[in-house]
Image 1 (tube, rainbow, N blue to C red):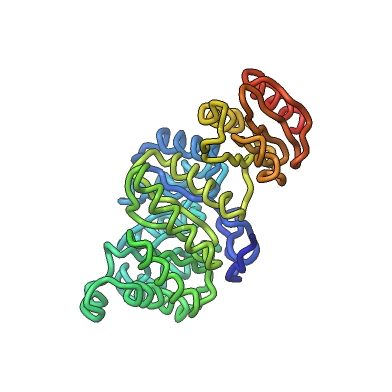
Image 2: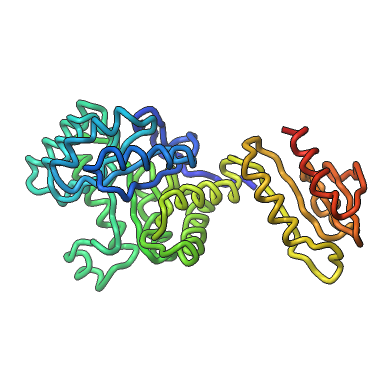
Length: 352
């Protein structure tokens, strides 16, 4: 299935282009103390290895801002500085060579301070990400709308956008996150209908691995199905590597990017006569070490298996104590149950 993706403007974050027809990128954020350069760089390397393409670090004070160049010189993916309120941290981050600022221009003080930041960003070609969060929405908008809702979130984002536009700045990225899936979706739709800038999407404060996976998958998939999203970050109370894995899995499930082999497997039923569940788990583990895109099916029934998975590159379909190995719906071998996986893995290796 294909989705009609919103055509946003193109913005470069370091050497990565987002927006337009560029691939939707995977982002994450470190949870180390940014001032601890060794620990921060180590985690960024681990996240890069997991598939992270843009990384954000918290910049809570000037000491953290002043080590940005040191961090940047040791990593290979673009670096984003997450800054709140203090324009001086933004100026220092820019001078240190940051690739992207995450700062809300309406929250950093006077018009002159905003002008200083935008001029420095323009001079260095640094884009600015506006980040509106339901938990930190301006009190004036909460009062105006009687609480946090999509219209309030959208107005907050657009107010920040207009500040930048009035200063002649257009390298803007927008993020509008809530812990509510419906609220987030509606807010993004409102903003997307009014401005052309790239959208960084996600569900904030989604939760732990279990609850956060469900909420993030629901929310991000809904946004993507509406054609919204140019970069994505999953927010979990967990190791950031889990965020990267889930973001990639969502993009692959939505068939927007293919990173690894796809496995399909049947849910089992009364016709299943082999021990399918552990077999499927072993196939899934085997495929984790393969980078070539392919589709592998693990089916429990020889009656329907090959037909239901006819578009799979390779697969197995179980029978009573034995099973079939098939490729593109055609049977290529028959084997006893205890040999099925061995033969399937051999075929997968040949395919790659």
